[in-house]
Image (tube, rainbow, N blue to C red; front, side):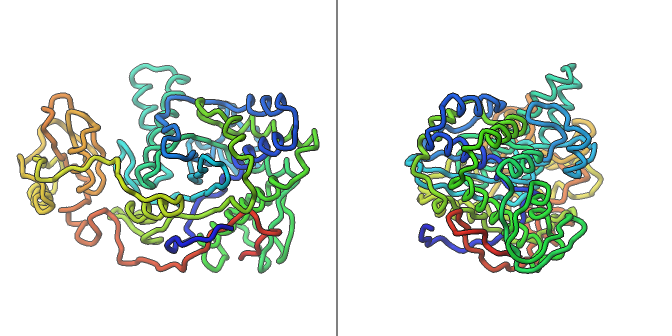
Amino acid sequence: MRESTRPPTVATRVGAFGPVQVIVAIAAVLVLALTGFAWRSVDNLIANIDRIGGLGLGGGRDGAVDILLVGVDSRTDAHGNPLTSAERAMLHAGDEVGTNTDTIVLIRVPNDGRSATAISIPRDSYVDIPGQGKGKINSAYGATKETERAKLLEKGATEAAAERDSTKAGRTALIKSVASLTGITVDHYAEVSLLGFVLLTDAVGGVEVCLNNAVDEWMSGADFPAGPQRLDGQQALSFVRQRHGLQRGDIDRIVRQQVFMAQLVRQLLNAKVLANPGKLSDISEAVGRTVVLDEDWDVLAFLQQLSDLSGGNVEFDTIPVADLNGMTSAGESVVRVEPKAVQDYVAGLVGEERSTDDTPKVDPSTVTVSVLNAGGTTGLAARVSTTLTGKGFREGLVGNYTGGSVSSSRVLAADAEDPKAAAVAEALGGLPVLADPSLSPDTVSAVLASDYSGPGSAAASMFDFDGTSSATATPVPPAPPIDAGQNGPKCVN
């Protein structure tokens, strides 16, 4: 394991399953290549994977390959085919329609291919989401997709076209959200469904785990004795899902997930299972049904870069959080994160100095903001305008909004990508920025509807200006990184 001088971090909450599925796929192909297995078989394995394009990815310009791995709780496979009733029952998946990205992991692989760092991002991290404002990062994909899908259908798009284009918009929003939070440009995108977790775990013959104490928790279905044991795919889901009944709740859950990932990687990188044609067939089928990759990723060339990778150089970490028990002004439970702290921590993990910041810097004194009240709260526009001038912005028009009825607050500008509008939106707690072609290029307006609870509102007096409360910040002891090179599974709670 690499010696580390990084600042301490905490184990934080993530979703129901980890990115082991994609790591399995990558490691499986790698082992095949290194053991001299026919490259034709490797090609066939990769050829089964669905590809997507137009996501605005980076391209490895910073001396490393940065891969965003997303675990999707979906009722369809990677090709959009509905899961069978038996599969839904096995996964405890209902019939509701939606896309939840409860697992978000950024994997950093330097160009020498000798190491890999997997950085977990808590699903409830409260971040800026392009076009949506502040929200939990696991909503970036689904909320953007559903918003865009409704717009496309209203414009007369077919169901298939609306599904395709809105899914692309959702993926792009998540990629941008992760990049903004971590300061890392995403080069490649990998997505896997919940079903893949089960199929790939079963394909390698199960994964060994170890528990300090026996557990029996009905909500997750976790019912395991103490000590070492091997879990099949369905049991593994219960193992990594359990939160209730653990000493530290979600903190212990993420430790379980990372230990499970590390052990699965270790087994694969040292396994003989891939010499078994039957196992190889199972892995190939699982990958084909459950994995999606971006179309510009030359996977074979990437795998050749990993020829010196060993289990001991695959490490799992989690970003730091400011408050595990954050609360928005609307009463929503969130994980509060500080982007600067996250970016500095990630830079330390990947061995870089943060010398530049690609985010446009805006001097508030150069921005004139009109604040318009579209709700029923008397004096709200004046209070918010005063708050903005206190932050250095210049005062524009202050009064009532006359552009019609609006149900949600927003910042308006001629261009939705205007850095000045983004600065105003951030100052008001992360409002969405919308384009209004009728405005001049140098005009920024804040329209406050009845839902506004940011700086200057009555609700904001009880909360931080970023829209979350820090009064109940919960200190969490630092958790050491977990590597995939240990001998046997690490025993956990």
